[in-house]
Amino acid sequence: MDRAISVIAQSNSQDTCPNAFIEVASVAKTFGKVRALAGVNLEVEPGIVFALLGPNGSGKTTLVKILTTLLRPDTGTARVGGFDVTEQAREVRNVIGLAGQYPAVDENLTGRENLEMIGRLYHLGRGRAWDRAEELLDNFDLSEAANRRAKTYSGGMRRRLDLAAALVASPPILFLDEPTTGLDPRSRLNLWEIIKDQAKQCNSVFLTTQSLEEADRLADYIAIIDNGTIIQQGTSQELKDCCGGETHVKMRLADRTQMQKAFDALRAIAPENMYQNPEMGEISFPAPDGTAVLSTVVRSLDAVGVELAELSLKEPTLDDVFLAITGHVAEEGPDTDTNMESGSG
Amino acid sequence: MLKNVSQTISDIGVMSQRDIRRYFRLPQLLITNIILNVVLLLLFNYVFGGAIQTGGVDYIQYFLPGFLVQSVVFGSTQTSVGISEDLSKGLIDRFRSLPMARSAFLSGRVVADTLRYLILVALMIAVGYAAGFRFQGGFFAAFAGVWLIILFGIALTWVGVLIGISVKDAETAQVAGFVWVFPLVFASSLYVPIETMPSWLQAFANVNPVTPMVDTIRALSWGTSVSSYLWKILVWDLGIILVCLPLALRKYRLLAQ
Image (cartoon, rainbow over all chains, first blue to last red; front, side, top):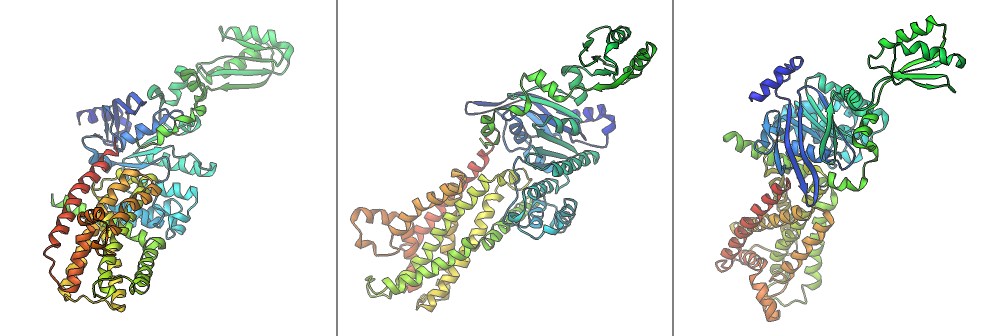
């Protein structure tokens, strides 16, 4: 518990989010000959959206299963909400909600019955379980289908019911394993809103994703996992800053013949790594200070009478980061490894 | 401590409610099962009844006790199918991530199956009565007989649970169920007197738990002494549960490996 207090003290903006933190120390897990996790270390602060980003077969699901007490680590320890996942599994289960890679709803029960059952298994009591089911059906736009068997639900509805089930006990820590896989764009946006809402209510969300865009849009903190190891972590910005190249300022001249004039004028503010494309009338250079450089550029070119057709800042993307760190593109993960991810071992 | 016990009971109740709902919503599971058993009962009685020699006893009187036992023996194969379905569909991950009693997933199923057996056995006794069967030993004997069959069903359900959690897919569970159930039902005193079998089969039939189970129910329904069979079946029930229950719970825990 000492640890909990110190972590909370560090993140003073989150001091109302007690215990919703996750700590992983040297966790390793092997299935037969396949090493799914090779010593993972992580710390996730309370009240944030955390994304574990990695290709298929990188060990994402295995780590989620360990943190949600479904799998025991071979070595290492993990604490969720202050409780050890192997020694205090029951306590951990009290503070988490899980939506796995595939919707886990009972098809023979109605939407309402599914949620009520989960509520009662969290020991909310009959009345509270009923009320909570009602509330969630409403929130997740399932009220009309509440008394229909889940068997008749569409894929998107099952996902929503599954997510609602994970939220029944209003858990301080929510685990979502590839929550948007297979969702249409509209449902995906809805889900993103729900996830952001969770963090606003001070709950932690631990999600896995293969989508760089998703991690970028949602996550306060990102860890990149590849081959069972965390290879880089930080905020989206930190990752871009550290490993994905820099922000560039890019411009196109109105008149290509003024290329040399512009180049000379800019040399004063961008002494190195200037790149020019005389054919297109384009010039670009690194701009670590971001937007501040734009006015400087405009002023310098104005002074020598060069007119601009276009001026922009190009941010590095997480794609650049992933490629730079792993040497391969995220979405092109080896599909053959999916068994390892979904297998129960 | 008291809170834990009441929570465990509540968890088992919630889980069994789920399984009971499943039986009533999937017609093939309960209704077909009941219809099949009733149709078979009537067919056997009127088709074979005249041909099989049962030593002067009415065939229905000889046959119905065995049929009651058979219905729970076959019924236990459905337990395996249900358990393995939950395992293969990933629903088990949700249940295992909840703070419910560890035993509730498996024992909830057993409670639901106990209720299923009760419905089945009561209905078949009613049909049997219509076809001329009588519990000649009186009400107490009938009452004891029903509960002995249910107890046998519970023991076999734990075998079903163990198979279901071991095979992890529904089709395999179905086949695996029949593999052990058919020899038990047919190589016993259930359909024909053991003395008519070849001696090697007699040896099997004599140690087969279905034989003392059927003999006990026959004795109760005929009003004769159960003393030479009753203890055997009670030992079997206890033995099966003591072996299969811990093994099934162990398998459940090993899902985390």
